[in-house]
Image 1 (spheres, rainbow, N blue to C red):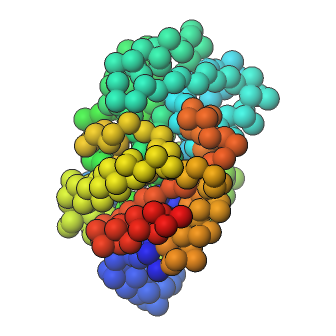
Image 2 (cartoon, one colour; image 1 turned 180 degrees about the vertical axis):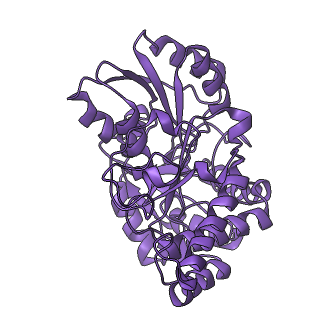
Image 3 (cartoon, helix red, strand yellow; image 1 turned 30 degrees about the horizontal axis):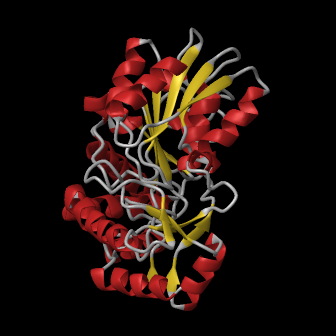
Length: 377
C-alpha cells in the first residue's frame, strides 16, 4: 500500500519507535511516580527522559514545562477551558481545526466570544493586519494553527506571538501539523502554549500528545485526580507537570514518542521538510497541467507551506476519488478533514477535498504512480 495520509497519522513508524513501544510494554510495566520499588522508579525515569527530550527539541526552559496528554486536541482543550473566563475574547485564524472550534463553540455559552481572522496566502503582512483588526479590549488569546492540515499554509506564528504580547494577549499554537516538519523554538518565539500531537510529524504512536508552557499558573485544571504526589490532600497539586497529568499515563506511548523525536533529530527537520516539499511540489506541478484537476493553493513556495496538497477532479466528489485511489492501493484522505473553517475559506465545504500528505518514507516513485492513477481517472 502507498500511504499518503500522513497528516492524519504518519505510517510506517521508524523501527526504533516500534521497538521502544514493545520494550516499554514488556519491561517498564509499572506506574511512574506511584511506587518506590525498582520497576516503578524505572518507569519514572523513562517519563523524565522523554520529558527532557521534548524540552530540548522545542527549547523550553525546563522539562517540567512539558505535560503529556492523550493527544493535541486534549492539550488545546486544557488551555481554552483552563485559561478563558466569561467576557474574554479570542482571535483565531480562518484555517483552524475543530480541535479549536468545537471547544470555542461550547465556551460561547459561558460568555466567551471569538473572531475569525482571514489569512492571506504568502502575505504575512496582510495576515498580521487581519489579526490586528480582530482585536478588541476583551481579547485575551490568539489561537493559531502553525500549518493548515487542509492547505498547508504556514502561519507567521513568531510575528503573531510578538504582536499578541504587545497587546497583553497570550498565544496558543496548534502544532499538530508542524511539529517535526518546521523548527519550533519556544524561548525564541515566546509562544505561551504549544500544543502538539505525537503521532504525526514526530513519528510517535497514537494516544500521546503534549502541552508545553511556562504559564501553568494561568491555567485552571479541567481534569483532577491521582498524581502520585501529596496523596493525603484532596486538593489538586499545583506543581508541574503533576497539575495537568492526573491518572495513569500512556508510558509506552511516551517512551515511543521520545524515540520518534530522536528519529526526527537524526534525520534533521530541514532535510525532512526538503524531501517532503520536493515530493508535493512535483505532484502540484504535474497536476496543475491537467485542466480537469482543481488545486486550491497558488504555486507552492518553499518554507511557506507544509507538505500537504488538496485537490478535486471535475465531475467527481472527493470520496469517490479516494475510493478509486484505494482500489489502486493508494491511501489518501477525502472530505472536510475536521476543518470546516478552512473549507469555507476555499469554498469546498460542500465537496471536501482529496488530501495528499507524504512522509519521510514516501518515495518519488510512489508519487509518480499516484500521478498515473489520477491521470487515468
